Each structure stands twice: as structure tokens, then as C-alpha cells.
Amino acid sequence: MIAIVLCSTILQFAAGCLALALIAHAGRKWAWILLSAGIFIMAFRRAHTLIGIIAGRDTPPLSYETLGLVISILVFFGILMIGPLLRAMRESAERLAKSEERYRTVADFTSGWEYWLAPDGAFIYVSPACEQLTGHSPKEFMDDPGLFASLIHPDHRKTVLSAMSSADGIPGPAAFDFMLRDRQGNEHWVAHSSLPVFSDKGAYLGIRGSARDIDHRKRLEDELRASRALYESLVQNARCLVLRLDRDGVVTFANRCALEHFQYPESAMAGMRLTDLLARGCRAYQDKAVHEEMLADLTRTLASGERMDFECEIVGREGGRFWTEWISTAVPDRQGGISEFVCVGIDVTRRKEMTRLKEDMTRIMRHDLKSPLSGIIGIPRIIRQEENITPRQAEMLKAVEDAGTMMLALINQSQELYKLETGTYEFRFEEFDLTAMLREVITNTQLGRDNPVTVTVSVDDCPDGETGPVNLCGERALIYSMLSNLIKNAVEACEGKPVSVAVRTGQECRISIANAGAVSPSMQSRFFEKYATDGKPGGIGLGTYSARLVAEQHGGSIAMCSSAESGTTVTVRIPSGKSCPTG
Image 1 (tube, rainbow, N blue to C red):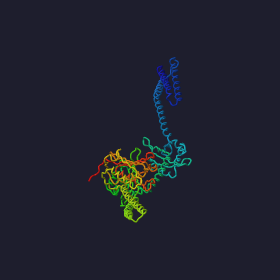
Image 2 (image 1 turned 135 degrees about the horizontal axis):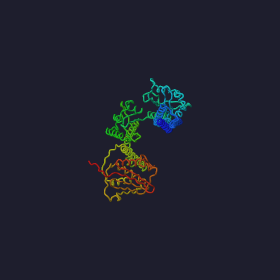
Image 3 (image 1 turned 180 degrees about the vertical axis):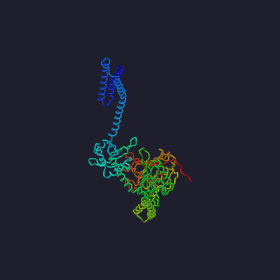
Image 4 (image 1 turned 90 degrees about the vertical axis):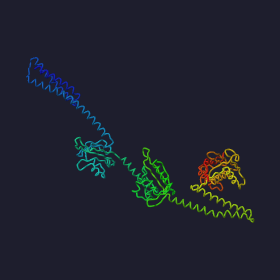
């Protein structure tokens, strides 16, 4: 009996201690404190019974004490086994709280309006961002499920509600933009996306939705549309041909002017290669070789992304011909590569026709003027030989003859200039002595002058006559004309002081003509331009211009430097290493 009561007492005291130890892990501490107190009271009661038995005062029934022992065993092991369960429950609760905090942080602290809509249409969750967008708090949405629909703009309400519902009650994923009105009546654009939510077992749990304020994006889209409309208006109404090409040179866009000129509908034009469009009738300068070279250059340009300017004649789909000037430019992408090409062409057919007409008229005028000039020059010369004319009459006849001769020279010079400018001059290269030509030019320049000017010639710093001939290969007539113009200008501008002509030989022949006169600063920058003159009597501004053309046509160059202190020096450089053709 004593052993039974003793075991029961020890088990109850142990159960009480275990209950006290579990207070730290229990969620309800006072409940476990009371439970522990009750167990300890029971243990003290068993201890009192044990003392009574030992003292012989009271001997309870054996069955009663046996039942008490069983209860003590059950209480002890029950509390012993509930400890790990309580600790696991506490840890699970802590993990659940942390997880809930993370997910709520993600949902609550976002610029977008997040929500969870139950299958019956009630809101299970609404993020605080809804208030910033609509002016209504999450509680208002939770209390009034119809509030969301009432905020949708009337023009969009039917479409939005239809997209968020379905015949079987389970809507599919949806993404769309719509307009809503906030509490103050202000309108906002939102980007809305939603998808159905299901449990692990496949049960439908409602709709998970998100709405983002896209007012700024919509404003940018409106500005982009306006900018694009302006761009299309400018491009479509431009009186030039505009083509957009992909990286392979295929047309992706053609404006109205291009469609009209090429005589293709827009559907047929798109997808054609630019080289194919040009190759059909592009006959640059009526020269097949030039045409093929131009197309090859265009193909290389499209491959390399370089800018290219070219001119060609094009034949449209229906046979219409027109001349165009083109510029092709690459459009870079973000990585610095080639995104596409933009080609802009200008119809220059009318300009070509006017230029051709002008050239024809000029040729006719030159030809027709030469015939009467023969009489203007010859008749005064014959009359001057008569004996019955006075000196005054002879002087006037000489003036008429000189004027006619000058006019004939100008016509001939303009013919040569025209051929040099257009590249149609037929060169006849020959080898000649430059120093002999210089002496001839100087002699002719001095003829008729009342006060001849001293003109000295040196070759490699040696006076003329002390060196041998300086052979030069070129068009003799053009070189003579160039030197005559330059030396004549130097003699007229030298202010009576000597003029020097210095020749240096080597890989190139350098001819420097120096005089004491100075060119005005305003004239220096356009000294070699056509019709540029500084007010010299009888000057028409073609001498230095023609000299530049002659030098450049011979593969050389011409330059001028001038100052009040050192005078003016014109330097001509002509390659001298090449040999002239023979036969």
C-alpha cells in the first residue's frame, strides 16, 4: 500500500514540475500556472495520505489507491508528451507569424493596388495602396463589395466587368487598361491584371488582382501618338521621296511622294530591295558602267552603314522617268549597331532640264557670237591700213579691234572653262620646256605696255639661262593660259616693282609667282572662286578660277598667300614624275 501511494505522490510532484516547465512554451501562461497549482495540490494530498498510512492513522482501500496511481501515471505521461507538442505549436505559430508578416509586407507596401476577391464577390484582402489610387480605404472595399464596380468609368464598366466574369463562374487570366474615378471625381488610368486562385486540391478560391496607376504612361503614349502623327504628316506631305529600309536594304516604308514617283502601290513597294528599285531604270549619267558602280557602292554602303550621296535617273513601274539626288543614312540602335536606314531623295528632273537648256543656249550663243566677231575684228584692221584716215580714227578702230579680240578670247576661254567644269575637256598631253614657255608668256605680257615691268625667272635658285630645260608633261595650251593669267595679274598688281617667277623641280614642279602688291583681306578667302574680282578695271574674275581648274585637272594644286609687308605669292604645284604618252 505504502509503495503504491509513494509512487503516486512522486508521479504527481513530477507532473507538477513538468507543468511549471511548460509555462514558457504555452500560449496561455495563467492557465498552465493554475493547472500546475492543481497538480501540486493533488500531490500534497497524496503526501498527506502517505503520512497517515505510515503513522497507522488511516488505511484507505487498496483499489482506491491503485486507481489513484493509474491516474497519476496518466497525468505524468500526458504532461510529459504534451511538452514537445506545445513547443512545436509555438514554433509553428512563430513561423506562421513571420510568413504572414513577409507576405503582408509584400502586399501592403507596394505602389500597386493588390486585392483578393472571394468567389461570392466579397473582398478577402485589399492592400492600403487602394486609398492612394481611389481615395477609399481597404475597409470601405471590404464592407461594400460593389464599390469597386461603381468606381469604374461608365465607358469602361461593361467591358471590365465582362472580362472579370465567365459563364462557369471561374474567369480566366485577364489584363487590360481602364479608367476609374476616385472619391473626388478625378479620372485615372490603371493597368489591371487578374487571375483565378485555386487551392492545392483544386478548389476555386476567387480572383487575385492588381491595379497600377498608369496616368504618366498614358500621357507619354498620347505625346508619342501626337509626335508620330506630326512625323507622318511631315513625311507624307513632303515633296521629297522618303524610304525606310531594314538592315538588308528592304523597303519597310515609303511616303506618298515615293509611291507616286516609283508608281507602285504601298503593298507592292514594301518588301522590295532599294537596289532592285533603282536597278530597273537607274541610268546614272546614261552610263551603264557608272550605273553598275553606283549600285555596287550602294550595296557596300548598306552593308557598312556609312552615309552615301548619289544621283541617278529612275524609271517608274509604268515607264515614267525622273532624276533624283539621294542621301542614305544609317539609324543606330541602342548597342551602336545598325537598326535601319533612311533614304531621302529629291526630284531634280526640272533642274536637270533647266541646266541642259542653259548649256544648250550657252553653246548656241558662243557659236553664233563667233561669226559676227570675225567681221568686228577684221574690218577695223583692214580700214586702218587705208591712208585717208586720221590718227584719231585709227585709234578708235584699234579700240574696236581690241574689244572684239578680247571678246573672242573670253568666248574661247568660257568654252574651255565649261569643258573643264563638266569633265568633257579632251586633254592632249605633251612634253614641253617650261622655262621656254615662261619666257614666251613674259614677252607677250609686256607687249603694248608703256612701262614694262621687270620679270625675273629662276630655276632651283639659279637664274634662267644657267640651267637646262625643265621638261613638263601636260596640256600645253592650258598650262600656257594658266601661266599667262597669273603672270599678267602679277604684273598689273606689282605697283611698278619687279615680279619674280621661281621654279623648283623634283617629284612635283612648283611655280611661285610673287609681286609686291597685296590682296585685300575680303578677297583672299574667295581668290580662286568663279567671278571673284576686287574691282580691277576689265577684270571679270575668271583668271584665277581657270588657273585653279587647270592645276587640279593636271593632278596638282594652287595656293595664295598675301600680306601688306611681303606682297602676294601664288604657288602652283604640278606632278612632274609622270611620262607623256608617245605616238
